[in-house]
Image (cartoon, rainbow over all chains, first blue to last red; front, top):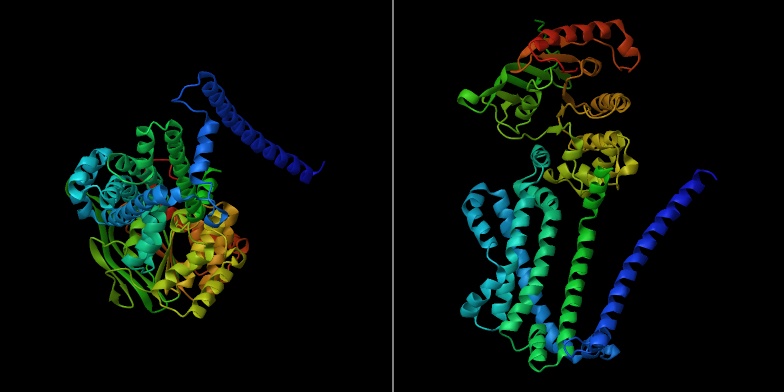
Length: 280
Length: 272
């Protein structure tokens, strides 16, 4: 066999390696589900419905609509849409605020000296502890929930942005200065792209926290939303429905995270390439 | 001390330049009273032992850093900030190129200050990349290229800016010997074609003599001018012929002797 043949063999081995890894991983998932199913069938507890029953309930409640509505049911509009609206408005508000403020603090020394301690202090507050405060300040409406999410997820975005901006290579900034690029353009073309990997790290963390805060705010005070539905199911002793809501939340979390990962993959293609190169 | 006047009118002049880092008891004098001129279109090399303050000198000349004392003048005007018409090629190409921009965007980057029409921008990018023979790599990213190619991108970026003065800070210190020879010839080629003035800092004696019209020898830290040596070797220069010519051998020995006593007080282990 020639060199090309060797390369082909090597390529196939890698493909086979990746395939067997995928196989192993899905086998573990299937085995886990199987154990879950068998155990819940064996104990026949009203508190632990079988996973098949839970999945069935998820599909029935939210994904059994007509093809015209993308198979989504009216229930999606009633309880999922308000949750998503709160989640996304709170999160986007925090992204705008956190990235903007982070850029300023990261670039302006006196601002960092002034606001640094406050930022560090607020980071130490567990976001759910803010619920009572926001209830008092903003009542039980959407404003409270959006505000809570925005403030609660701000610290990771802010801190990561500050950190990213601060670690911009001085040689890259000097390069910008040598070519007479003004401050505003240096920010847009050097500082922001260079800080992007860390900003995205902050976005990912904050999105997970946003889901948590959305649920908490809806459990505490709400008349609609997934958290509200979850609480209603529990109070009405509809245990399979309760489980279905929990399952829906995890599906939602996964979907949001993979959506963000897709955006990140596109935006940071250069970063993965450059990092892979420097590891060689 | 050999003193010669530049044969051409002075473009850039450095007078009484001093730079001190820190103050009081911990102050470190990096540059001590430097004087020299660079003529229009001249290729001037500055050699000196490692860590003698060459980088500080270039940062002061480029306006990136304010010297503690003394002046740098371009066209008779004192430089207070980064002047137009000056470009700098750093030693560390991997850090000075932007990894999120393609090769052509990197080359286009300095043009944003100049507010050129789109067609002229395209033209300059094409011309600069062609000058460093990287036309085919325009759409690649810097990290997809070898070290020597990356430094060529950095040179193309500087050329696109059409500087009057091109400052180069040990640009070939981190590439292998063969690539280095190729890059030296490439710099000579663009120097002639773009009729740019080059101030080339290096710690490599052969390189300084091979490339230049004049070699400025600096003492060890704090840097001051030890000698100003004209290089009368004929052009175009050739890696093999020029480097084996009697004149070249004599000059490199002269520069080496000037640097050696300067290195005398230094600890062993500094390689040149």
